Amino acid sequence: MNPVLRLDAVSKSIGGVHINRDVSLSLAPGERRALLGPNGAGKTTLMNLAAGVTRPTSGRIVLDGRDVTRMPVHRRARRGLARTFQITNLFPALTVAENLGIAVQAGSAHRFDALRPWSTARSVWARVDELLERGGLTRIKDVAVGELAYGEQRRLEIVAAVARPSSVVLLDEPGAGLTSEETEELLTLVFGLDPELAVMFIDHDVDLAFRMATRVTLLHQGEVVADGTPDVVRALPVLDESYLGVVHDA
Ligand SMILES: Nc1ncnc2c1ncn2[C@@H]1O[C@H](COP(=O)(O)OP(=O)(O)OP(=O)(O)O)[C@@H](O)[C@H]1O
Ligand SMILES: [Mg+2]
Image (cartoon, rainbow, N blue to C red):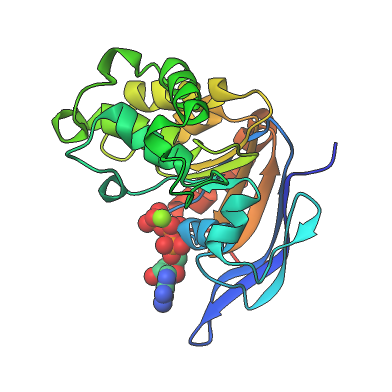
């Protein structure tokens, strides 16, 4: 199966310091890849490179067969690459359904058509209903976002991220501030949204990541030190070594 996202020998250095070095990985449709590694391993930087927030110093990023290495975030998003928004990108005074309406609308073709106000566009609300249902948010659809519990906000944030049709979603610590049970629930929700959706996620709970992922990439000092199924990577001595910070240069 062709990968939906591929990083080809991607490196990033800032001020002469290598943050990521020669990272190659790919995401197949439906794959759930955990990006693991100790603090400062370069996980967030790699996600930002994949999303287009920053540009690599060298290497290539390919989305759906197309080179997007120099393509900005919003154009990658239009091509199906989603990532989580910060909570602050939700509108606290608006309801859950209204926030989703805005997220859906952001990707629709008649965004600036004054003759067809988005609030009455049926297709938008049909999609919102679908997202509410799949995201388990129907019960709270009329609640203002500012009134939601933190866990519910995280859930909405992720559903909003994939409001437009997406083939890949990048999640940097979706479980931050949540219990591991809540994080598991959140990832289960994402995986259930669409069986073809490729997901790459970062989480500090290594056990949880191994349980939820179909593939694991282990980063250490900006480099990939292991890549494989959870069973294979779990058995590698390099896993303990990298978390203890004692991996030596090859
Ligand atoms: N803009 C920058 N300028 C200089 N150094 C940076 C910059 N961004 C990140 N770094 C450094 O690069 C390294 C990797 O950072 P990054 O945030 O990608 O790690 P991480 O694996 O996400 O860590 P954490 O688990 O703590 O979130 C760190 O040493 C960090 O200090
Ligand atoms: Mg990080």
